[in-house]
Amino acid sequence: MTDDVLVVHGGTPLEGRIRVRGAKNLVSKAMVAALLGDTPSRLFDVPRIRDVEVVRGLLGLHGVKVSDGDEEGELVFDPSNVESASTDQINVHAGSSRIPILFCGPLLHRLGHAFIPDLGGCHIGPRPIDFHLQALREFGATVDKTPEGLHLSAPNGLHGTKFALPYPSVGATEQVLLTAVMAEGVTELRNAAVEPEIIDLICVLQKMGAIIKVHTDRVIEIQGVKKLHGYTHRPIPDRIEAASWAAAALATRGHVEVLGAQQADMMTFLNIFRSVGGEYEVTDLRPPRGGSPGQEGGIRFWHPGGELNAVALETDVHPGFMTDWQQPLVVALTQARGLSIVHETVYEQRLGYTEALNTMGANIQVYRDCLGGTPCRFGRRNFKHSAVIAGPSKLHAADLVIPDLRAGFSHLIAALAAEGTSRVYGVDLINRGYEDFEAKLADLGAHVERP
Image: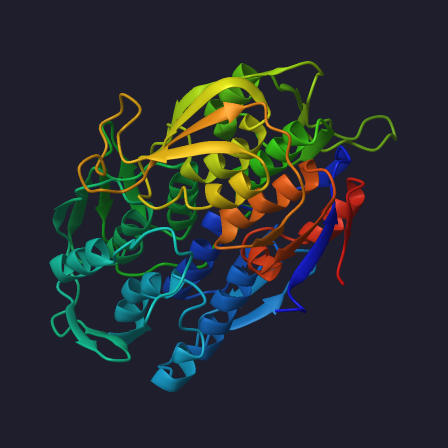
């Protein structure tokens, strides 16, 4: 663990400019979609993060040739020789990502069978794959559970179906999309997730030749086709990373411009950010003109001085306040005057990171009650999923151990905002979703170092 630690000298406002690439929650799924094509695909603006490395490795194991393109951040996928991979090879990747479950549909279409290892991912709740398996069975897949993982087959092929999700799960919606596009007949998915990354995945599949209709009231209709071809796509920027840097600017009383950030996909976050007392300015793309270079657009976030305001917020599926936004923002809320209330309705165990903030001087109480008006699945299940943050609190340095990706970045923000020198252990986990975060910290004037 001594190699996986960052020493953070806190108390310095973050100032400067960084850039976000394609959304982590889209890029990895678009990479899986390349399996479905019969010609090569090209994906631009791919971040250098661990999830991308995992999917790239899994694709390679299944015979997809993945190569770097001419442009920085460009990947090219050649799926002309898709093949089976041994369980031992696949298990090398087990526990490092939850992406493998999404290989099921494409592999069933291409090979007639698939093996999925035990799934890893962040420990923020059970996040069961029952929705995925139920959907695959509805399509006609046979699922055999073994000690090493899941063996799937489709002896009679995959067929369209009508399926309603009990909860608008992003992962299960992606599973249905990646499976339905080449299933025989029409698939109707009700109570689907409609996050921007889902819509962008639909754009990818449509470019490949899929026929997908997004209706009102979370209904998606997919008409299966016999073949798909490759795509060329530039993904939407990562709205989670953009919001994380915005929260860091607010918590450290700094000023950060996030190039690539887009207003449309961040409207809910921007409203809360302004309500708390943060300021932002959207800087639109300016094309080259008259020999002068163009300028990439983005959003500038800053702390305007004075006191921040307490707020009440509830996480929810899109278009609600994203669950991945709440952890970084809560660090800033420790500096707001009054009582802020956060009701987490997406993941039942996502407030565990607040214990570390309390050791740094924050005043955060967590409750089993639903402290909000949104209908919640967790209210009577004994999960501590609501938090009350009393502020402002003076944060001081501490030794921190990162439990999961988003909590990890929150701990990092807290260390940057605190007085004194903190040691943050497990920082390599942040590489799962934040590209070159140490270099970006340096660009923003943060005083951090590896021991």
